[in-house]
Image (cartoon, rainbow, N blue to C red; front, side):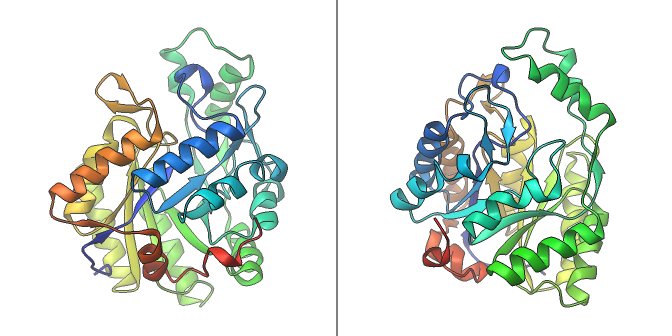
Length: 312
């Protein structure tokens, strides 16, 4: 059974590398926008901020540490939120490119994807015919023939480089049941240490579907594999975001929202900020008579090294 607490950690994934600028005028692109939206999300109740960077000229995903460093110090100075930097990066980035910013910043947390997978974004092309930037349609089309690589060797490398080398702890991103077993393999080998932060992800084409039965199955398997040694969290893509997060909170889990995962605040209505999504899930959590974890409480629950140990 996952570690139980009436404290719910809210993670906010601010911009990601999935959505493109044409999809929403509110998507954070420039370092100023990422900083402003991150700070507002923390003020709204997010205790963890999951961060990607984008080229400020055209909004394309970038692994450039210099771009990250234009917003990371500002967020740290303005909030006490835990900063969690992606190691997934964006489509087509090499592993070393994906690790460049985490190595430079040495954050408290990074994401860590637990398996290679198809990651299909191309169906969006059926809904959109005109784009603001030339790179967008090709980026989406390329996902038709793209494998998001995360081999056992890659995972071992990240665990050693960031985990052992920088004292980083991980948001273990599990897009399917097999990813839970991969994580259990690394736990058995002693390469990861509890408490694990297990992010179960639903609704990405190529991963497990956004079906309530799948959510319950992923939870059952995680409980079987990890017992009391993990914190369970849930995110779901697009329209499934809020209902799956609500289910997770009801079942004793933690939640992730943000414009990386969904551009909407309700049916057919674009969210105008990440903070709007955070405020909404915070209201839901509190209406369930649960408490939202503060950044300090999240650090204690996940045994993080502390904000004073980062390099930004």
